[in-house]
Length: 168
Figure 1 (cartoon, helix red, strand yellow):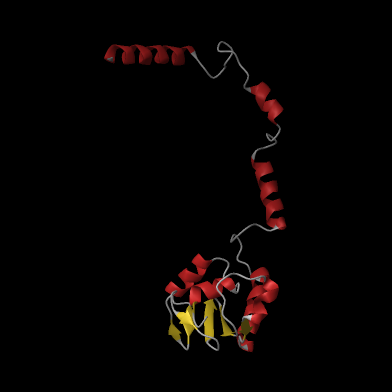
Figure 2: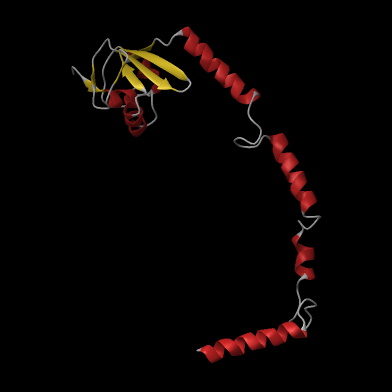
């Protein structure tokens, strides 16, 4: 095997989760060889250096061996060498730390504390109506017992029904 498609190799060495994602990354210009963006069908050889930009970090890999099929995570070091620069790795570490510390309020899934505050707010907003049994009893009226329905409402309803029947 002299050459392998770059999208297939990136998927097989577990740089990307699916081959479709690897293909899309190539099409978006996030995969480069020697500073040149490559198409998904570009062939790679042993010794090539591939740069993969996964914002905010650009990973660099050296091709040690070629393969077509996906391999287990333990076998990946036989096929690629991670030559990502130290400053990129530090940037990745800072992003991981910063993602938890400086998360903008309201972005993403709420924290436990925010969830408790939201629960307290909604409990106060419903004024204790979270128990369904009082609601069932409070609005369980017969047609004659409904205090919100008046005789005027009944007359308007009958007039509307008569009007609709006459238009047919």
